[in-house]
Image (cartoon, rainbow, N blue to C red; front, side, top):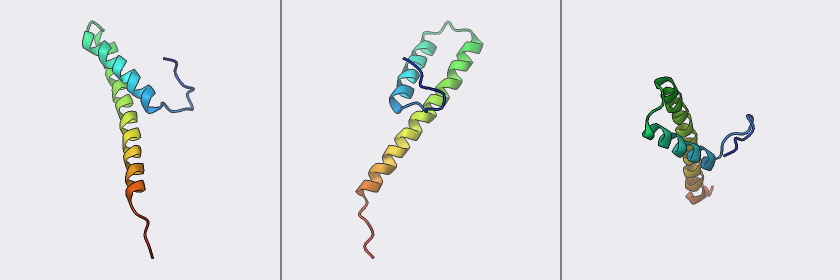
Length: 71
């Protein structure tokens, strides 16, 4: 997977895919403690990115389902 430019945020799919790979690395074990902690911290960042995308999508769906005010 190629990383996007630093000024461009990850898409949901990019963050999810990287998170899946990271979890697989952590589950296999064998990484030194410092590396495992760094992987965990990156996983937390990726999970937050995914959650932000999902929260935004939910808000957009709810906004689309809400009938407009008729004053």
